Image (cartoon, rainbow, N blue to C red; front, side, top):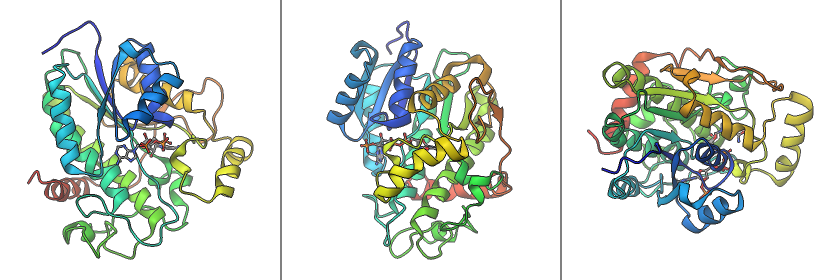
Length: 322
Ligand code: NAP
């Protein structure tokens, strides 16, 4: 195994937005970044456009909406012989206008498949690699969001519904056609995204419970602020895409730039300040210069250990680990 002077971090979805800027910030901090992306050419161009030194990154193909692709990615990463010191689960799709569900290669609803199940499998496979890190505290950072946490105003928004995994009936019944929601109820595309991000939070907490004490790995999540300019909103109404950044800048004050959001992710990966496991970090909903981060309280559903364990077991079955 190659052990060079640089630590290595995998960042999923590093071809745009927060992931691209996190990759850039991490290379500036001295990390080698594995950009795990589904479109190699786009990623190469994006890395060049933002000026990331080609010495400091490697692009490896990963389509999180395909379980085969996740396995292949892990094999391809291992073939580089690099040690793994951190993993950032950042990639996501948000498909708020869909009337009918889209499906992953494995037949699962696409946003839960990409945002949760693909990352769930990736984390499970790469735990073994992270255990071998020579860093004192290797880290896994999973992107969260305010709209998945009912403890925050954004998580209470009833359009189309707040996040709610119910009793996980949809997952229990196999999560394939005609099932499209984790709770087994009627498909609501915007809620599917919120549910998938709630799964990200529950997964972080369950990873912490299962692995932190025995491995020393730090598991954490963050809400980086409202990064209203990223392509995450590309599937929304064009008018929404125009107004949303202005609304967040001038009305709510929740807006952060892609650069700042990326720096926040990078800080969770490498700053000793964030060496606490099981924490969901936030900078609040009103951004101010120099605003300090804090450990954000999470909803009763996100704190439900029984649900986290059940989600874990069902996810293991759906990704073929059980
Ligand atoms: P973005 O610019 O759209 O980035 C999403 C990334 O995910 C892209 O690189 C995209 O790749 C990748 N991706 C999508 N489907 C994939 C798949 N099947 N396999 C591999 N990669 C895939 O969005 P963003 O705003 O930076 O979002 C990054 C993270 O921040 C997400 O987890 C999101 O939930 C979180 N977040 C964002 C905000 C915000 O306000 N924007 C707020 C809170 C949290 P392509 O380039 O190939 O499409």
